[in-house]
Image 1 (cartoon, one colour):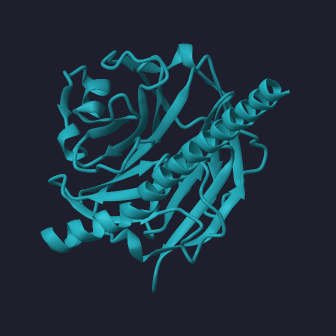
Image 2 (cartoon, one colour; image 1 turned 180 degrees about the vertical axis):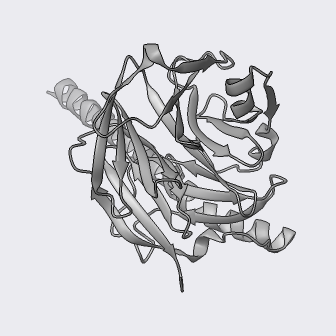
Amino acid sequence: MGKLSFNRRSWHATKACWWLGGALVMALMAGVAYWQHWYEPLFFHLKERIEGPRQGLRLEGYRVVIEGKAVAGVSRNLSAISYDRERDRLLAVTNDPPVMLELDRQGEVLDRHQLEGFGDIEGVASLGDGRVVVVDERRQRFSVFAMPEPGAAVDQQRIQSLSLGMEEDGNKGFEGISYDAEGDRLFVVKESRPQKLYAIEGFGASLEQGLSLHIRDLTSWIEGLVFNRDLSDVFYHGATGHLLLLSDRSHSLVELDREGRYVSFRAFLRANEDMQRDAPQLEGVTMDDQGDLYLVSEPNLFYRLKKTGS
């Protein structure tokens, strides 16, 4: 009996140790997540105090006016958004199935276009002159096409494409794009492993005149963003020359000036007074000509933000 009692006590002690160890691991993981989410604003606040405030969009002044609205007819994989200034509407894409949507400022669907023969579409940008570019993450391919007629599909075999093949990393390739029409630059971000930021100069000219591209590696700009665990999209703001960098794992948007220096920060967590819940997986960001911000999140969520006082 004594030996049996000892074995039972040993088993219960071992079981208790496993439970305690599991609880400690869970607590540690929760602590890391808490530290990353809550110390990020503190980090940027201290950075601004040390370096001094810089003029810009000042993202902390934006407030959510449409939060997590489900986009009609989309169940999953809403992956990017861009503003078409010429037609005053938003362009969004899904990657499975590949579809381009036209949305109004309220997130209502105005039109749909099947993207036939396209792969893992993760970025979209309006180029002006009625043209659009999308990027295939896995194939590292940029596809350019004219805005289709209402309801019409876009056939990959009938349009212009450009492949760079710079980052061969499966599903961690080019994640977001934004176009600078004045400078003819296409900004591109690579999601992770490692994070990258590029400016492809002469993008439009290369399509029209066959001129060579010049690719600038701007990754040094993002090396100081120690809390950004990935990059899901980029937006170029023409009036200031600033970049907005979106991170879905960090639930945040960061503004950099034209020299790559930090300007401002905004988190998308339920702790913010203007949000009821965390944005689950932010995938795209853009801004319209009135200065309103728009974001999309997987699976199918639409967000709109306005500057305080605007």
